[in-house]
Image 1: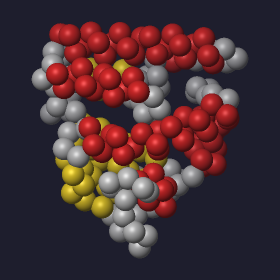
Image 2: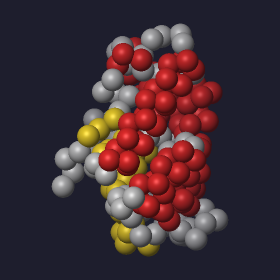
Image 3: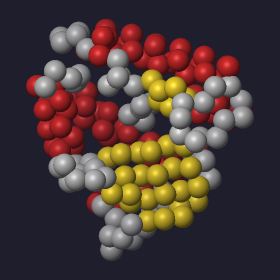
Amino acid sequence: DWSSDVCSSDLDRTWMVPGIYLETRAAVNREFEQFTEDHIRRGVSFAIETTLRSDITFRQMDLARRHGFELHMLYVAVSDFSLNLKRVTDRARAGGHSAPPAQLLAIHQASLANLPRAIREVDDLNIYDNSVPGGPAQRVLSSRNGVIDFRFSPSPEWLRRALDRTVYEFAAE
């Protein structure tokens, strides 16, 4: 059952004030943390949107697990940072939220660096490549309790790089 409360910056546009990224991002982060901690404390199922860029997501997952939650994650990435930047720029031009390019690059790199940890710590993880504009996202890897149980072949280069030199490393196809 995937019905649950959702916290997503894309759903709450009140914080998207151009030119004050850091202040608004900090406020949104506090709101997300409060939402998450409240749902864990009450034992209520929930879903959040995250870039997986920092340790807070893993600390929240650990807290949720200790409170009896099962952790499911859908991870979506694109083939390279330039495509990511283009999509964020297009979203900003259409009135959506954005961030400075250097910040977006740092988020992109940190997210991919945290992917092996997500595989290890999430109960049920599905990873998707969303590189084809207007096309469906392609499931490229799935894991259950730290064990990879599905891998699309050929795997995208970004996924191979993210898992390189980890226990999840696999050879180029």
